[in-house]
Length: 273
Image 1 (cartoon, rainbow, N blue to C red):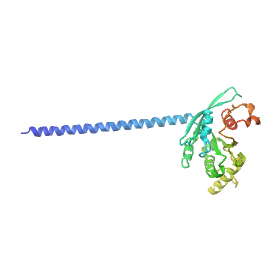
Image 2 (cartoon, rainbow, N blue to C red; image 1 turned 90 degrees about the vertical axis):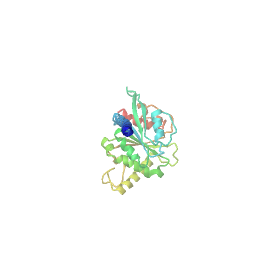
Image 3 (cartoon, helix red, strand yellow; image 1 turned 90 degrees about the horizontal axis):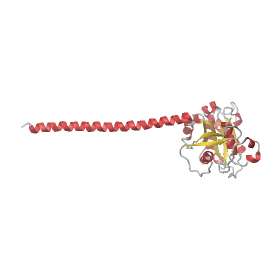
C-alpha cells in the first residue's frame, strides 16, 4: 500500500535534486561568462594604459576641425603616400620616420596621433591624449577659414587654455593647409589676424583673460609665453618629399620646393634638439 507513495516521494526528491543541479550549473556558466568578460575588459584597460604610459610625452598630436586635412596630413607623415582620406571617426595612430643628415643620428621614430573632430567629443579626445603630447600641429583649412572661424577659434582656445599644455610649454604649430587651393588670398598672416580678432571677442564674452597678456584688451599670439606657437602655410596635397637637411634651412628656393618642408623642419627641430 505504501509503495506508490514511496515512489512518488523519491521522485519528488529526484526532481528537486535535478532542479538544484540545473540551477547550480546555470549559475556556474553565468559566473564563468562574467569572469571571462571581466578579464577581457581588465586586459584591454591594462594594455591601453601601458600603451599610453609608453608613449607619454613622446607623441605628435594632429588636431583641427573636420575637413581641415588632418587625415591626409597624417597619411603623408606616416606613410609618405597621398591617400584620399575619408572622414575619420576614430583616433588614428601611426609612426613617422624622421630623417636628419646633419647629425650622426640618422633616424628618429615619431609616434603620430590624429585626434578626430566631433563637436561634442573633440575636447574629451584631446583631454584623453594630452599627456601623450610632445608637440601639437593644429591644421586649418585656408579655403574656408572665414566660414569656419568660430569653430576653429573655439578649438584653438581649448588648446591654449589647457593647463597641462601650458605647464609643459608645449610647441604648437598652426598649419595653414590647402594653400594650393586658396583663392581668397588668406595666407598665414591674414589667418593669424582673423584668429586674433576672434579670440579677442571670445575673451571679452567669457570675461576671462587667462590666455594672452593679462590686462590687455586685445589677444595676440606673441603674448602667449607658456605655449610656443608658430605659423606655417603649405598643403598636404603636395606629393614631393624632401629630407631635412641643415643646408635647406636658409635656402628659399629649396624651402618652396615642397609644401610640407616647413612642417618637416618644425618637427625635426622638436625631436632632434
